[in-house]
Length: 233
Ligand code: DC
Image (cartoon, rainbow, N blue to C red; front, side):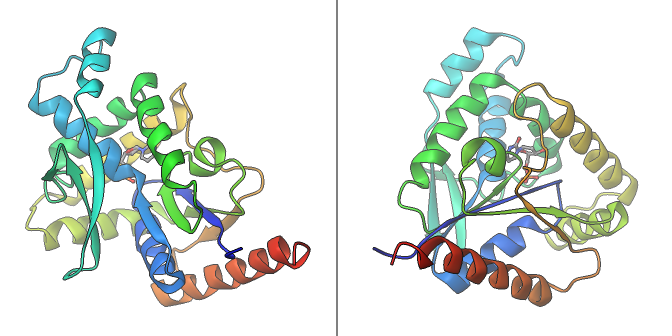
């Protein structure tokens, strides 16, 4: 039996979840799934096809026409998301998507659609998945759950620099406003709101370098592996 676990990482937007999930997956040779990218790709499809979010039938019909998959680009070592076989990784980070994605992700049919695929991806374990409901809804039995937080000022600065690096010139107040709005919608929606699972370990990375937080997470992985597999040997 291979000693593999499921690692669920949740937290607010721009807390460094993906950075950590990616680094952990690389180190452990696990698959990394950025579930936010799935909600963003669905949002892109809805915008392109003028899907009315308040019409349940239109939403369900649109979902039937969406196929999502991830592909690892060996050159960049990034896992890109494909929407109906089109690589949309570069489009899903735009502000137009950021402004609409929380609204789309709050729709029950959208969540059912995404969660089903996410659970399928974790069947063989050996996966690091980041999102908002991974430890609470997608994998409530994940062996390791991490809930990440960081100061709002740190998060705004990170997201701002990320967008600048992608040549998206936007003012910092707009970034702040967008993050606050998404925090609010993600935490207060009826369907699977963002919350820390009771058994999730807290990781505040406001003052941690990516290397330090990886070190901490790897220590947790070791503890969990020891605990999960020591009795079954
Ligand atoms: O992680 P991100 O910023 O790329 O996520 C985009 C949006 O998708 C975020 O505002 C909330 C939503 N989301 C969600 O509801 N559930 C998830 N598992 C992942 C993301």
